Image: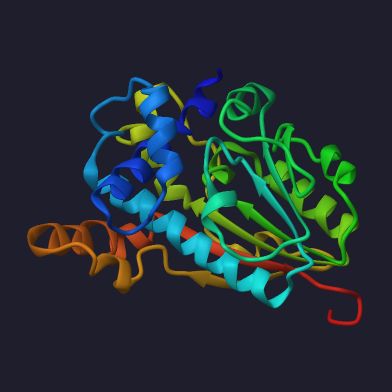
Length: 266
């Protein structure tokens, strides 16, 4: 498995940890998979602070996705760079069909824990390419999740993905977490992904970078909401709020959403 693919074990561990603690995110599937995989991670990757952050990020994206699906229950869901994530089980909202997409080597592992169905399919494909998007079923609307993947792609690859999505679907909504360029520089020295010898390549300082054609930036979403921080207590709550939810941290890591608009809405 490539080093960038191995980073999937970092959020898996984090989600399993917070789930066992009964805070932030309930994810029994992550607990189950982690118990079986037990991938060797370094100390930084096993930090409880990072686990809280990973759990909050997942919970925020789950909430956004659920909201979108409740408004458009006939949407297709495309989770790009899904790793071993169990969002398909956590999100309790209707959808037309759900596609979990990751590299073939990752999808091979994923198939040990998830089963294909009429409404669920796993695709072994690279996020650095976009041709596979045209093999997905047609739909008037798609909701796309790109979590923990943008920093390993080039600007061109992300732009191509967005372009392919805008060609394939009349309407789509996209959520994507990004490093800023400052965060990318920081990964050279201190970042949990170094535990698996991975490197971040690409940072986004301007969310308008990908506006082209039907693609429009929508908004930035808070990755560490107060209600989730308040599930911590005492020193942990104060420390997390200062180190992971303060202005410095927010300047390194962001969540952006985008809309692909129909011709009439542009």
